Length: 51
Image 1 (cartoon, rainbow, N blue to C red):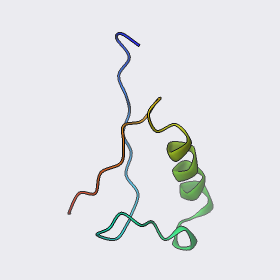
Image 2 (image 1 turned 180 degrees about the vertical axis):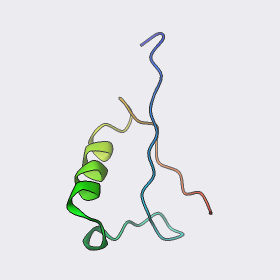
Image 3 (image 1 turned 90 degrees about the vertical axis):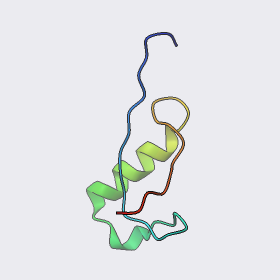
């Protein structure tokens, strides 16, 4: 879509990009699932970045 900017968000993960869902609060876990569902539409593909 022209003029549409995608968003970004961050979630804690290991060096392979695996997120420990049980360690997330309910609010953060829901945000994670929301972001995963919208990858490619509202969010870019995930990328692991070192801190």
